[in-house]
Amino acid sequence: MKRIVIFASGSGSNAENLIKYFKSKSNATVTLVLTNNPHAKVLDRCKKLDISALSFNKVAFTKTNDVLNLLKSAQPDLIILAGFLWKFPEQILKAYPNKVINVHPALLPKFGGKGMYGIRVHDAVVANKETETGITIHYVNENYDEGATIFQATCPVLSTDSSEDVAAKIHELEMEHFPIIVEKLLS
Image (tube, one colour):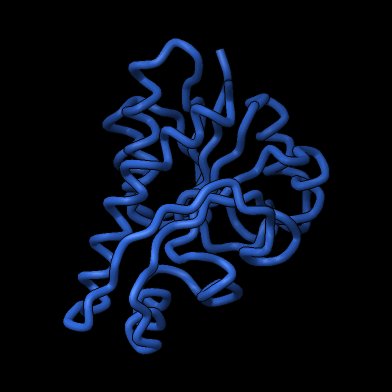
């Protein structure tokens, strides 16, 4: 049985989707969810889904090996960033080479980098009058949104679409594709 650890910072809809998807599978399971936000809704979702979840602070993540030690105990086969907003520390990336992935709400390399997350990405897509956007699932490296692309899925952007309309389309793509790509990576 493959083990998945998820990092999230917010509501946790992608985390919940992954947890539910793998509950019905015999090849992998989400064993732990970690968050940098002690008030994140993902903690409530995990409680309802009976999944272990912990929050940590910046010191535990970047200055000590506390989070790395948590990961070592969890023995993940894959670490998934699902709406996790902090840059991933080098010591964790070195301990888990090609085992940390992220989903980004745009077609990288467009609209990526520091500060480009959530509605900010969709605002930029609309402001730039893009006719297409999508999601990028990619490996995580030492730079924001610069790791190798694993998968992209696209959707049209209409001239009448608001940032919220684009966000809804992106959310659908994430719900549909993210669990399947994770399962493929684990097999």
